[in-house]
Length: 156
Image (tube, rainbow, N blue to C red; front, side, top):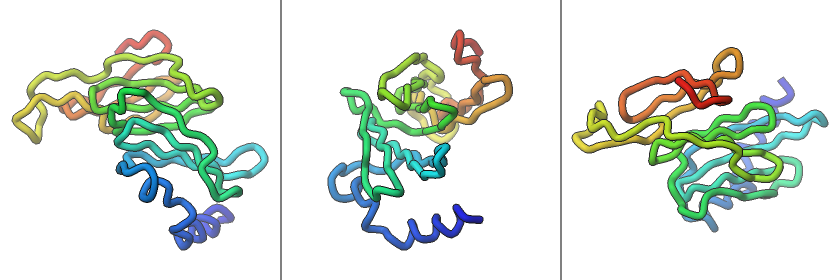
């Protein structure tokens, strides 16, 4: 209940989280939040320039930015423990260390099969990521498939 009240306040203060609109010039493609041990709200956003932004609700500002130099658009974002999972335009899953912003592991999850259900072109983008049981991970892609992964050995 406490977070729902605070969530409404965040939505009313549009100018506090306007970094993407003013400075980044990229669309927001993923949005997640977590509540820390000391009850602070941390907001994570990904964008079409391949960056991940970490926002502090308490400080009302951006506190960290990291991402790839290649600017491949991130299309999906998921948080678990101290890891950030992203899926990108080229079909890659990356697992980032939240603390240092480095990629711990990556793999090609979805490939160009030429059978994307809504287009006549080849597509490989990862469109969604979700946790499953026993540390596994579900991904969905523009190739029309849903896959269940074991991130420890990157196997389906």
